[in-house]
Length: 585
Image (tube, rainbow, N blue to C red; front, side, top):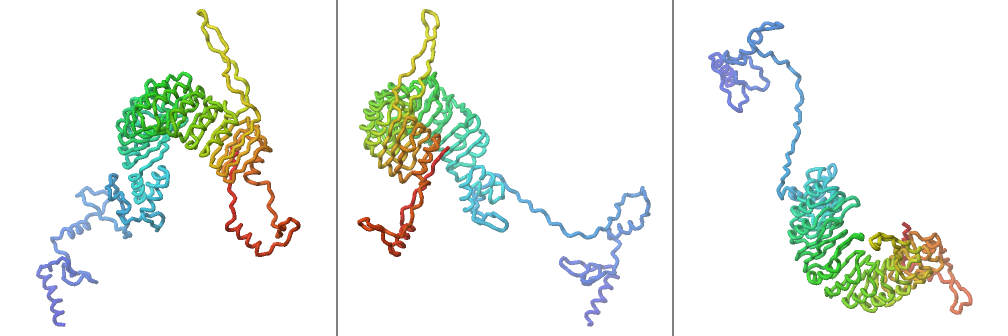
């Protein structure tokens, strides 16, 4: 008690003496009187030297007037009621150029929020995004930071990209994000020029496959010089497929890495040089224009010297002739496995004889649109009985059903047969056309005789019985009156526009049939096809619990255990009926 009175007496004595108790940092005592601050109201006035107290006294002595022209003194602030503290908004700064570790969603724990309070591993989100379209992946990057990093991971590791673009700008914005891209497939809806090739060459240093196809209204404006420069710079390019190349003017391609080259819509090439020693597949499609001046004979002759390893050759041109095939024979491409020469109406049986002499192991032969006859078809069957698996003879109006039937009989390995529009009924004779002839300095109209073609017999019958045939196409064969097909492995049958095929003379014995195309056929024929492949009109078999005796005299009751055994076999091990679809459009 004495000590407490002593402390309380010493505090006023210190104040009277004019000495303030020094305030220590972290002390809970009053700075004026020295007593504890908790529940304490200090009665000691502030010293005269305190500027804050003098300012407050001066404010109280100022007269209250509407206008005051004395010293400028800030008015006393109006007391405001205390407000709850506001929460500061959290701002996240995101850098555009991120490091490799930041782009990887696994670097921050590997969890990405997909819903309120639900998270999944980043690897799962990346695998899901890889199965979406490029537009969907780009949209997912705007969800959150985790989704954006997963989308960037998809772009960085993408090896194949299929894109439908309306111009060069979106392609140029996306390709730099895909440094590992090796295959690019573009479907362009606007015009394309050398800018696209420059963008691809700069953004995809490791590109191995490039495919550019054009929409109906788009135009490919690439020139031969630009294509030559692009192929020479891309030393890792192995597959190149370009569509709509009508503005090239010439072809001069030299590459040691190129193995597949497809160029379509070519026209009037002044020079055709393809120097690719490792080229395996070549496809050149020319426009169907009568004024095309491309020298196909020189092109065929040069392939033997510059593309000695060629295996698959496809050329489409209305100017193909026997001379071009003879030049191909002199090229000495003995390793050719696929030969496709289509739309060459000047190709006859003489060209077939040259093909038979030149190649011994053809797997696919396509002479659609040619003028070969049944004799040429017989030469093909004798030359390739053990190798030929695909034979396409569409638009060959000089062959008959007898030649087709012999071909299916003598080619046991045949899996694909296309005779579309070949077995056609005789249409109206070709109208007489006129051309300008010059006689004695004047111009005179002369009638041009119609092209002589073999007359197709009407009401032809076709019987095809084959053990390995899987696809048969007879579209547009209006000369067929009866058809019998017995092919246990056949899965696709095309009977579109077979207008003269009689429903009662159609028999299909193909248990593996899955697709039948019957567009343009009469309703009775469609009903007959449905009846045979779908068995729609057959009534269900009655399940009579009786069995006829061995001598056929009468029926006896079948024991119940035999019926149960039969039902179990049908339920578990019975033969399943194949699902076949009849396409009418």
